[in-house]
Length: 144
Image (cartoon, rainbow, N blue to C red; front, side, top):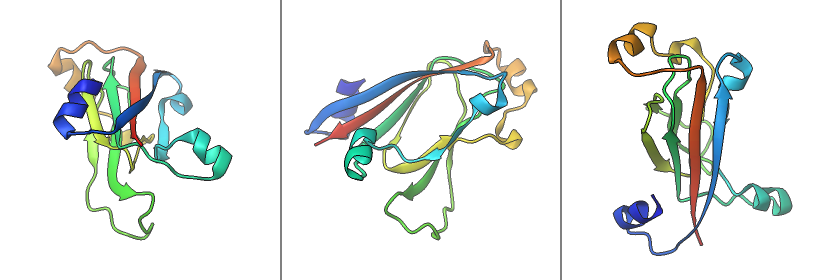
């Protein structure tokens, strides 16, 4: 994945990545959501109050579920005025094997709201297997 992103985006200073696996039990409504946030180097933020943001953020979906909230990505960076309009957003519903890439400085998350869940008929007609977990791999790509 690193080689592909480096080649496609012509990155010359790609030096690091932070990754983790997330397993969410979708039977618990409090556990299923991810509040809107900005990705950043958490250690720099805690130690020095600095906001160092990744060049790219990625989500690789390992499962599909009719109960999973989609990832929302808004065209708004941390350094922009909070009162600015956000005329659009990207909505990415989990699907096995799907790989989402976006500017790592953008506001994103998977907030809990019933209107964001796809209908049961959508998953039944797609023939895709679903389960009660939402499993993802997240990677933040940093350049220095």
